[in-house]
Length: 283
Image 1 (cartoon, rainbow, N blue to C red):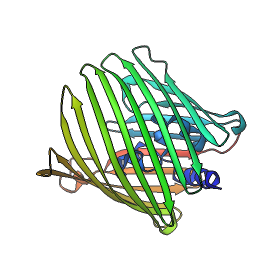
Image 2: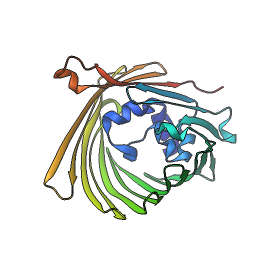
Image 3: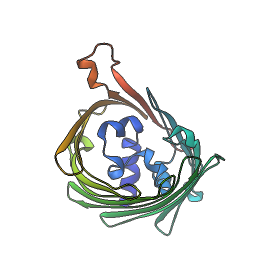
């Protein structure tokens, strides 16, 4: 039952980098773009196409499933342009979603593997990603857990990134988010994350997030994400607010990341980026 609910929800809410750059919630909130860090999520986003166009973003992804019994195949542009693109495959075996991905880019080789499972009102996802590139060599481990309690989702997460070149660093992210479902499958959320780096460089920071995705009707979605960042204690705080909206037209989702600087500078554009998502069903 949980798997069915997940598949239905992702067909409605699957989106793009434009949506997630507005919400600023990372992989605490489900989205199609997280196949880049959890390749087994391909199985949940079968037969979807997404793309983004913006001032600093140009990416795409396509996930096809001729027959789910034989797995799901995906291809997508990496968020960092010089990393090229990924090819991934995922399959459900004995109620486990298992996925792998790799990049054929000779100068920046990437390989990822992930596994996830639903059980009762809970889900756990684990992934490992390694990058052997010109500019850096790094290995990343992520563990993501979510538990549904009525209208609430409790989501703790941990990520470890080990960089061996050009510097020797261990980057840790430890945080939790609480998400509450509201009218028309929308939600509000609040969360906090502690980020610290150890090794050749030492750094500590704290980040607090909040936001909303409000579905006014079957066609219009309003979004707003807010974040407060603290570097080295709680003395130097910086705020960030990102508004956006989405349109739903049958199997199409159109998303816009609005530029709040337009309110103060008429030379700025209205939109930071535009995202498109299309669910094209079975073959």
